[in-house]
Length: 143
Image 1: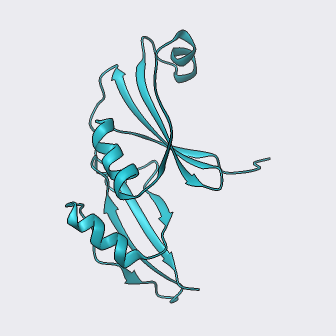
Image 2: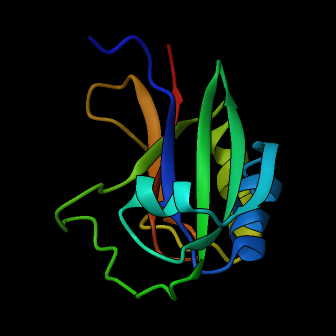
């Protein structure tokens, strides 16, 4: 049935701030940056009078991260606690977790803890928050 993982979409409150995190700090590659407003968008989202900025960032291997900023209608804030129903987090594999951790700390990104070794010893990992509070897991395989 499913042949591949295509993308994950994250709604953000401010695209420029989100891009500083995902594009500049995590070094994802910009693929698309556009504003969409049409009956087609309204229909596919089940809304009316939608205007949104869509940015697609390449993670590699054909996988994308899609950032969505709703310009119309105005967004509603929500609690991004990791235990809430729905998508709890997005995870990225990194080459050097200590380097990424240090870089993000220098940009005042909040972490739950420094990178730790998994109980099975296969990975080092940690969780941080993007500018809107979405949980991001960073994982470095050790094998």
